Image (cartoon, rainbow, N blue to C red; front, top):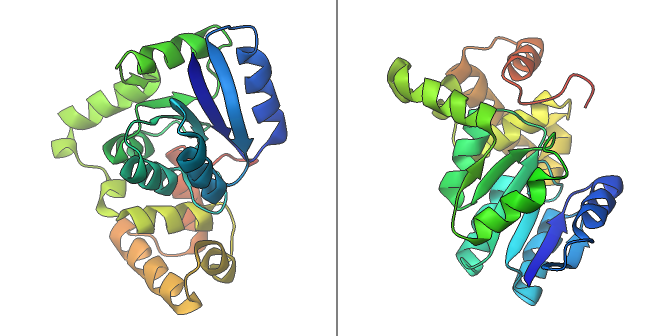
Length: 213
């Protein structure tokens, strides 16, 4: 029996995944949540085989959840399910310990197979992301502009690109407003961006946010 926790802030997504897995006798969903912090706590409590994790989950983002769960219980295999088709995010969460990075357009037939492959020890990555990673490794010395950002800077960059104000980012990440302002200044300098509009266009171009998110 493969036990799973589903962590996604959209109720319909969680319900859909539960319904998709329900016919499979070898799967059992032991808990679900829309909170990153609760996802970490539930993993400590239930010790599931698999955590299906949304990258953009509130409280703690998917990268931070991956780090904390992996540190507390490396036996939990994390599969990130996301709308963000970008190799930088994939590289970060895989380096943090995730065993899969899957774009949410995955079919209902593919997801159960992916879960079983991860349980068997494989690392599963959406093909288009694998191609991006391969291209990056063969050009520009394997570097991208986003690789210049620390994990915290990438996290703040993402929230700002989604339209959050500095104060909202500070509240969400439990930081001071001045710290967020300092991080934003560093981000803009590293990426060569002049204003917030350029930041948003940059994020859209790289698939880090959706146009109508």
